[in-house]
Amino acid sequence: MAAVFLKKNESRRIRNGHLWVFSNEIAKTEGGPETGALVELYDNKDFLGTGFYNKNSLITLRLLSPLYKDDLSAYIRESIMNAYTLRKNFYPNRESFRLVFSESDFLPGLIIDKYNNTFVLQVYSFGMNQNIQIVVDVLKTELNAENIFTRNDPYFRKLEGLPEDDSVYLGEVGIETIDDGKLKYRIDFASSQKTGFYFDQCDNREFTEKLTNGKTVLDAFCNSGGFGMHAASAGAGYVTFLDSSAGEITNAEKNFTLNGLTSETDFIAMDVFDYLQKSIDAGRTFDVVMVDPPAFAKSRKSIPTALKGYAKLNKMAASCVGINGYLVTSSCSHHINRDDFIEAVISGAAKAGKILQQIHFSGPSMDHPILPAMDETTYLKFAVFKVL
Image (cartoon, rainbow, N blue to C red; front, side, top):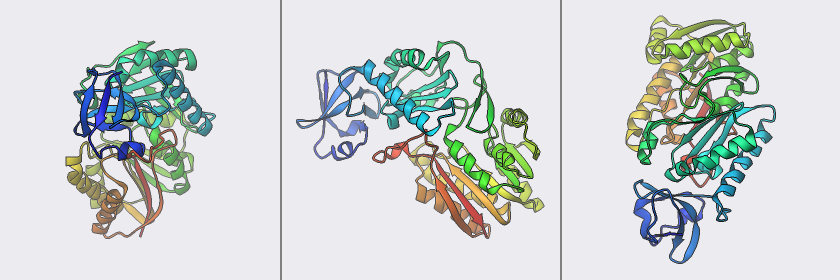
């Protein structure tokens, strides 16, 4: 097996459990490693691990678990099944969840979302892409897969030097009705965002039920309606579903009906910033305002602009919270850390003349484990504030 050697004093992060080696940390290679191949990593003469090599990527080496024993097929099978067991411990009555969360499950560059017997993949590692048939076979033989296909983000595929088109490995791209442990969602994979559903907020959606009985609620950036539906299921008096996508508003309406919910509702397709400004101008407030925007920061250089965006959004959202109401706010930008996000929210609210009392903070749901040694596996910030 070919080998990669680190420069002097570059091994500490790896020894602590980080799984990426960057191109500027490499002193030399031996054995002529090819992109996509498994190679061994060394610090001088000390063996540090085995991983997928990509000479054309900034992330030149993506390490596997230290438990890897020279049999990739067995390793992938065991890693997927370990991930499955972990999820079923948390969610014994659910058949839909994030099954594999990339490096966090020691399967670098591989995401698998399970929707009953439909499995939707995102593949962002050249080496994993070359061995994807092993993954497909495991899903078929061990987890009774009926449909397996990809829904990749072209941006990340391009960074890895991979084709940007999607693939169908089994069955078809169809429709599934899933549940998050409590509520049902109809997923049309041909028209949905990402892999079809945002599993990372499932636990947080359930938490918000504590706030919403008898309340007026705004679910902004509502997507398929998860936060608003959980509010309604907890007895919210009135729920406004808001999203810039008319298609997502239609999905939210269908999901609301699917669950037989009875709260009074509005379903509004409009830019969230425009709607919030109109509400401010009209003096309209809600007991609970929930904002769950898409990522504002796609790269480190966009961090300053993103923080301004979060401050502006939360200033407007806090302005729409009534007396003794709640602001529920999220960021899924992994380039934005917790402290900077909270500071942006606080400063934004302050500009609206509001003081915030934080009552809860969380990350993603338990099917999105985190490697503490690897900040890149930490991305979702979810915070709940009482607005004073």
